[in-house]
Image (cartoon, rainbow, N blue to C red):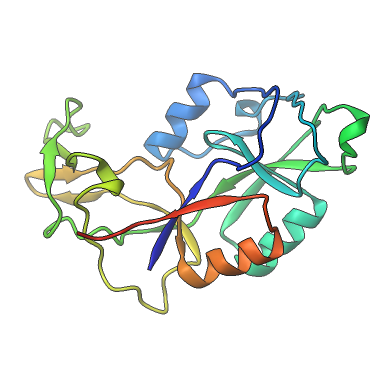
Length: 199
């Protein structure tokens, strides 16, 4: 069973949105650098700052405690970029925070059994590029069997064949069922995920 990490269930009153260039890098699978991360992101909410949160698309941050748990559950799968989180004192912030990027990669979408459509953007070498049809990963997608060597969470890699490139946005963070259940149990009410249902 595969889950996709979703935005925070908490209702933030104010968020800092990273630049479009960083978003595009994540979509394309280009590794982020420290200068891609907002130096002093500002957030406002009427709750204690969570140890792990996704207040807006692709902006994942963790406290020291959140980082400790993620490293326990998914060692070697993540990169951390230090940042100065700016929030009101009433939100009881921790001392240190990091922006999180998922580094682990896998290829679990079964492109031979999934319905695809041509993309407007071709592969860098001019070959046809195709993506999932309809609602993408929420539509008619098929997955390969989950194997023991699959990382606990990952971003999908492209599949290159002689005449076609199959592309899935690297923004989506996929998770194994057992990893999501453990993560949700460690951080109750802080994260949200959606289960992918195969047609």
